[in-house]
Amino acid sequence: MPRIPETAPKGFSDEERAKLVALPEPYGFVLRFLFGTGLRWGEGCRVQASHVKDGLEVERTKTGRVRRVPLGPALAGEVRGHVGRLVPFSSHSSFGKAVRKATWIADFHVHRTRHDFAIQWLRDWGSLAALKDILGHASIATTMRYARITEDLIKREAERRLPRARGGLIEGRRRRFVSTPCPPRPLPFPAGGRKCWRRSAVTR
Image (cartoon, rainbow, N blue to C red):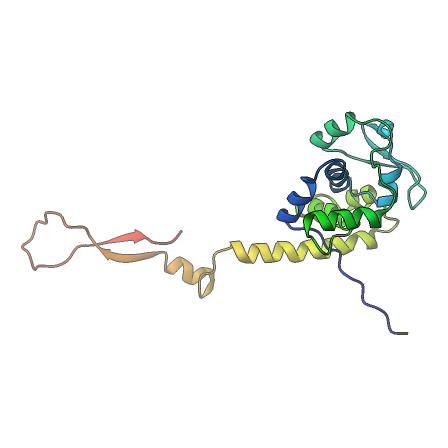
């Protein structure tokens, strides 16, 4: 059978992310927790407040190994105010349905919060090896999916931000200064004589 091409992981835009984390509780907290940890839905549903110590200890993972996930200061402060289970839901489908209805983000799926965590981590120049351990991947090849996406994002952002001078850097340097007439001022020669010129920077 022909191999089905793998779908590229997809995160959220800044606008979508802001809308999601601002939902009323407990939806807003659950989404902030998932965005801030990159946990799978099943792992998040099993997390207890007591698992938060110096970071978050994730037990009963997909690979069967306990792993430690760092928490940002804001999220750590929120978690300390909770007891028992941090995610008071069990069905990801009903949770996703409620979120889509409240935000009008039609393609929302809870697993995309995990993709978004990974993309943001690498976009902020986080280590690929560290991301592998945080996400609990058995192979670095799985984590590399996010690296390819992040490289494309950085390339597009660089192309958008860098100045585009025709002819490349050499012509850009040549065109850095142009001759422009001096402003009117008293001159030591009669009107109608030679003109004074100065060099002024027009590009930087």
